[in-house]
Length: 240
Image 1 (tube, rainbow, N blue to C red):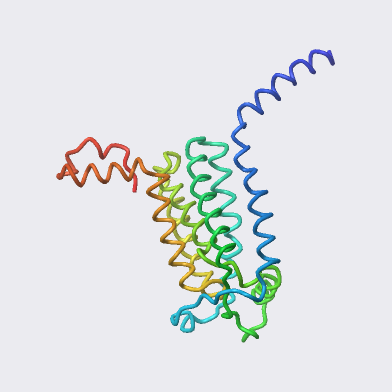
Image 2: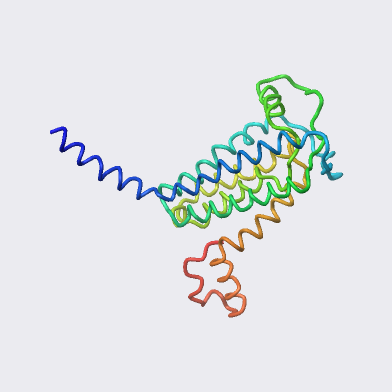
């Protein structure tokens, strides 16, 4: 009886490994974390200050720590959902996120940057300010642009809105949009990033959108050339 169970288990494990063999892509996380940890230790004092005048007009608000921390859940959900549900979308979201993250590491390496926007003291004392203090202790105000918080949030939202899995899930897409917007705002209201970091993240996301989701991009070009897109069969399956 034990022998039979062993024989059944081996093929099942083999099939499981084969089914989820695309997990190798996630090994990129080891490279990213190691490189980022090096930058956090290396870039501490000598860096280019990245700020814009509008940064001084944005008030600090500790309550934005909630969506800022939800970013980790949001990104993990986006990647793992497609990992288990839709392999093609999984490869697309990984290509989008990991390419942008690599470019961010390269920029931070050749052009060390940071800012001095963080407040020295807080007006209120509550749980949120304690979380902000923890964030400030664990994450230095360096290696900032393009903002990975902003870039990855845009990447996940784009992936969700372009996936067949969420085509008829309006509520899910709305929640994703609201959370994406709140996360982007949180980077500025917590003084984690300059407006410049946010703008460069949008710029990079726009470029990567055209690269990774080029099928939809090409369809747009075809529609513009054809004219009268409402009568064109090219519209079939187009989600922007």
